[in-house]
Image 1 (tube, rainbow, N blue to C red):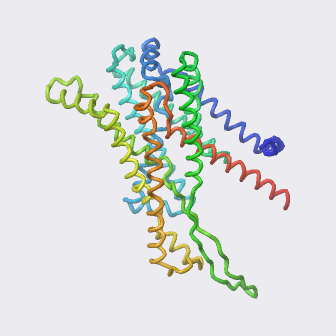
Image 2 (cartoon, one colour):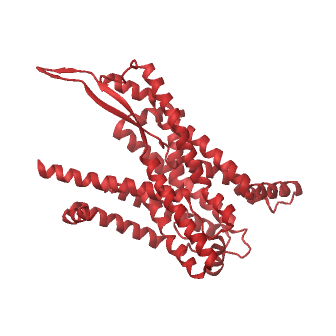
Image 3 (cartoon, rainbow, N blue to C red):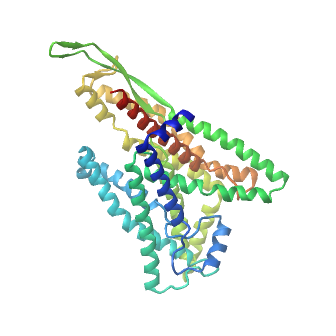
Length: 412
């Protein structure tokens, strides 16, 4: 650990890249404390204090619209042949898809900004001080610009090869909540301190489980046939093809939470409807989704379903089998081509289930802890821990790769 820190300090380019990333994260946190114009700060503080949420800042929507746009583009690669072709065009195709993702992020951010403002207008105390179209349009413009700023900062961070920029921004947003959690320790009695100790133990167990599942993989043996190049003959090369247990990452949880939150969000717009039937139906929908038991059950099974769905999108056994055949590789005991594709698909289906169950348990962990302890202010966020641990592991790997590359250059 200390050896790597010393090595980083001695390498100007790596050190400067890390300092640059830290600087971008500081800018993000400063922007997160700048409220949007046209809001009542007193009512804003009261409302978000009661809801245990972040400030209604210029970057209140975070990188959510960008993630939504990325998911939509990934789905389009399955439906539209043009996008599927772009996804196979290497660097050029990747840049074009990223460009389309940026374009799509802007209208999604504007729509989400409008939805957020509409929800805040139903608060008991008025938060939006001016509700005329000009001021509402200004707030939406500022919030959309905030999302565009985060998208730009994320890409700048990614260019430094010190972790994924968008993931690091999400990581910074989660870690920034720790001081408020620690503040609650001051007002805890002995029973609450015991609950806090239980939360810490469960959190450590969860982190260890996340590391184990994130790094878990099934190695498929692959042999590359003997090749003749000029007067040189290479012998068979034995290697392996790693299939990760959790190939989908945190995306299934994002899909599931979007589906679970969508009906009550829409119902909020109709709670004050003049038609009694519509008003009662909207209130019934909200009450149903506020039931923690039904909420947890739906959330659990949706995460499992979306894990299978998203893995089927990103895992391409046909392409893997085709590439192996072109490169002279084969799985021992399995014929190249279609049999290899079927074999890889069967193996993938077997290891998806434990990964899907793991993600589902992480997703409902806060709900379960709230039901067991009846504490709403302090929960073990499985999804947040998954993001934090995954980002830390990915960043460490990229920093190690940078250091290894420098060592190789010095040897050469």
